[in-house]
Length: 390
Image (cartoon, rainbow, N blue to C red; front, side, top):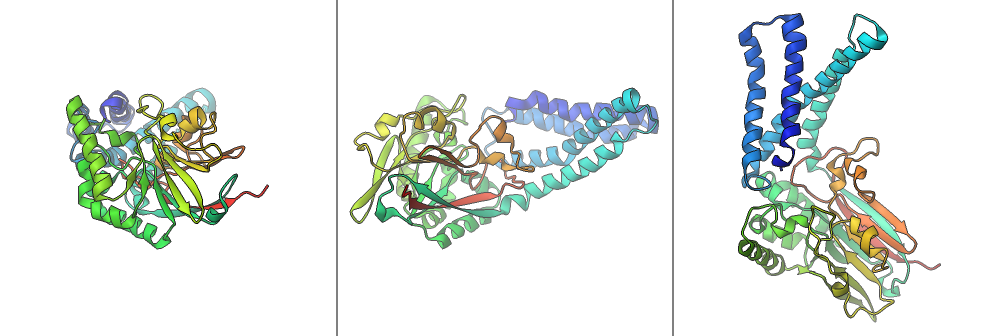
């Protein structure tokens, strides 16, 4: 994880202090050498910490506490200094080239924004990640069998339970209690159950089994143990262990390019689930033909696919399902005045999308590898199916 962005991280960490040292300590304040050294010690520590984390073979350390401590220090120390330095630099340029004034207002602006950024980061890393939102959606669907009119589904995604077992299991307990209180007709899970290893699921297996009883699930990109350096044989073994835990310890129905029929009276709907169908570098393992083998034309189909980009690329063009459920994006785990970072890369990053008689719901999930949420709380989606009459 850190290795992928190590150069930008080091630049952010170091350059802000280079600027502050050159602009303030050398030209204006004239502090003594040992005071300058004291200022540089946290930066030197962060540079060493970054280099160590970047050197590990896996996507993240086995003990995620090391990663979370690093991210906290990065946001608490390097982040505010970077914001202040940027604003100060811009203010200096404006002062010299446009305003022609002696005072650099960038200092005050940068200090204020740095304080706000620090407070927002601290909130997102603590209280923000504990918030749980229940989003209710009533969907009017073409060709829905009449006995399923009013049928209630809970859509859950991206639990990343390794984060909770490494940090605060009580949050996961609250999420499971919330799902149980809803008492839906069906629970559908759209992937990223683990962070990196199936063993993460074992400490909370009973909790997941009770909270999401008889759930139907598919895999996400994190569920293939591809973020750990393993031999091909070891990875196959890990994948078999994941399947065994999900099916036998959680009691869930894991769909792997397959489908299941749900019956109510004389009517039925099809729940189809495909393997992850992501754009590179994410896994592309979906086989839609296999998943829908034997399904009659005209059947009502709900498609579970972790990556929402697959809706426009494969599901919608082939008219494979009336309703598609996805996750993956986490809604960027933050939102500012309706803007989410994930919307830059993925058009369908959060919420309800429609095209003709086809609907896609993307949830921001109930967790994340990084325990941070800012104005984008963990989410449970309650979908009420209604028959479209016109």
